[in-house]
Length: 291
Image 1: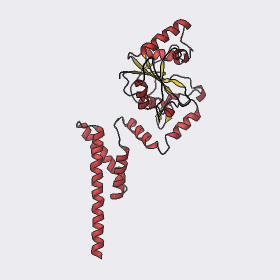
Image 2 (image 1 turned 90 degrees about the horizontal axis):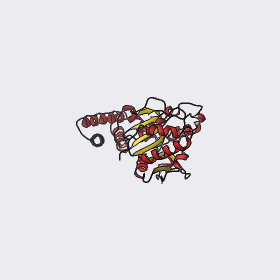
Image 3 (image 1 turned 180 degrees about the horizontal axis):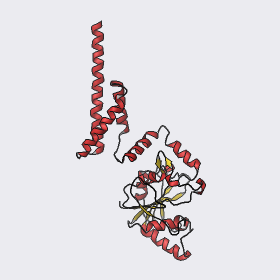
Image 4 (image 1 turned 120 degrees about the vertical axis):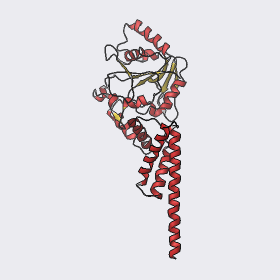
């Protein structure tokens, strides 16, 4: 599905003391980069705000004059897009994920679709819109008011037929935004919880290394366990390093990266089990001989 993405990153962040909110880190990744990671297949990604480093290339723009509010910022971003479907996001969503984005795009019938938060409120800055509907209503508002500066988003969304989307399991987090220091602290604590920390860490490492490969975390952890128990504890990190190296070589020769990791992991795990079985058989033989 062809779509463009507009990320609004030019707010004043008054409740955060005016800091550069999109640049604040959660799990060693900026809030803006976390949002960009949720829409990697957008044909064009436009960030409305001041330029800053990002994990992937984007197109930058700004409303004129700056500080005109979300509706003026959205209009500026819309001028940089051409796809019939436009994903519109705020830059402070630490838990937005790709399945949620896909659900919004799939549901964008009528004028579009907006994420519905756990309190039953539709979120206009976590939404997929039909571009022609946006352009039509923005033009009408500009004509009616003479300017878009300072107009709230609800002036736009009140005129649109948006399908509400609730994503089971992810919606409560996908709509979570960081407006205060307490919100930021909660997000940083959440990613370090036992059930989230490994996935968050793996995603952070892949972003840092510039790779995008599906990783079967359970398989790799099982391999590390077998290597540690059957050979020696230092064998675990060394073995997983060698598996990654072998998978990279296979992928460079044309193999599917995820399958290359799985196959290298399988071979190394089998080797670790054979190593452990041999050591156990040898110990049994020595005990028998000593008896």
